[in-house]
Amino acid sequence: MAIAFGARAQDLPDGPGKQETQQACGQCHGLAQVAMAKHTKPEWDNIVTDMIGRGAAIMEDEIPAIVEYLAKSFPKQGGSVNVNRASGKELVDELKLTAEEADALVRYREENGYFNKFQDLQKVAGLDIKKLEPARDRLVY
Image 1 (cartoon, one colour):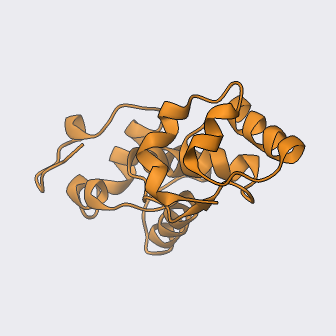
Image 2: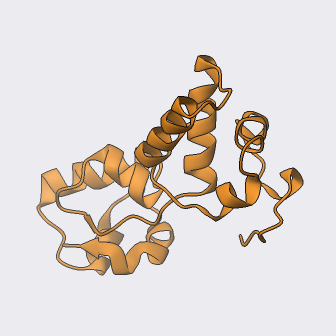
């Protein structure tokens, strides 16, 4: 989704935390700057914390919703993912698998050994291989 420099509140993706993000981020620097940024969840957490330190009026109970919204709406494309070593959580976070799919992949790997190529992942029951297609170039074996 491309958002122009003149991003307005209605241009931001819908989702939980959108309203809090609009109120918090739109006060100082506008929403276009937020919409153009791409960060990991820990990076967004650091940015929000830094903004609070600079005077952003964000309530403590709003922080998780804002960070989660930013991480889901404006994610940084991660680096490579080693499917033979990644934890279930890493597979969920980096490859956007469901927890069930990640568990199935880890279980298969533990029972059958390492994957050698992308096609090997097709053997994992309960894994939608089509979800991995966009990340295919990031997978390491």
